[in-house]
Length: 254
Ligand SMILES: NC(=O)c1ccc[n+]([C@@H]2O[C@H](COP(=O)([O-])OP(=O)(O)OC[C@H]3O[C@@H](n4cnc5c(N)ncnc54)[C@H](O)[C@@H]3O)[C@@H](O)[C@H]2O)c1
Image (tube, protein in one colour):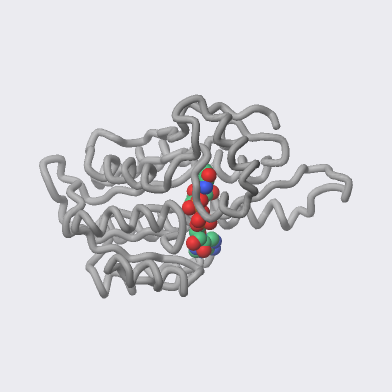
């Protein structure tokens, strides 16, 4: 699908990979709405790149429905939906403080996995009645963000890995289900990406993480996620697959 003039919604667009993707796609002529809980952050980015910011909590069905409608009113129905909203979590199931509180596990699953599904189902519902476009008669593209922790979760990542593993697992069945409508579903599984998440780490910790990447020996840049998202939108044969973006990194147990 062509990026130019296409209406695109990006959850988690206020920061990191979502913001970098929004920037790249607006530069290519897309009409982009940033859907985020952090509305001030989203507005700041939107003003810079000529996008719009819409308040949205991905876990809340009414909030997502309203946000998708608000974006549609402004820029037309979204044919591309990119799910970047998510939170990181690190805690052992059993630590010195005892078993992980169950609510903590539920919260990660609710935001990362259920939030992604919630946005997908409402975004796809808007795409289905649209007129197909281009040589391949496409109606839409959905791109989700998993993590390499879906495959090699480290000690302390059980909740986060489970949430991202769920995103990996729903990719193929939903690509199959939505194929009849000309809607593709793809997933990007990043490795270590230099976003606000990592800015909180010390220089030493960042250097040690960077050294663990085979090549290039550095954290990925959010712009590199944006490059791949563009390719996924433009290449109609990419469907039902999870692409790792990790410089060859395979994380160890700790
Ligand atoms: N940074 C990494 O190394 C890395 C690696 C693998 C996967 N990921 C995943 O990539 C995605 C983007 O990560 P990032 O590093 O750009 O993070 P980030 O923290 O920079 O951005 C995440 C955004 O999601 C938003 N968000 C959180 N909860 C929300 C909710 N309930 N509703 C709407 N918006 C919400 C935040 O406000 C924030 O703007 C996340 O899903 C993350 O798990 C990140």
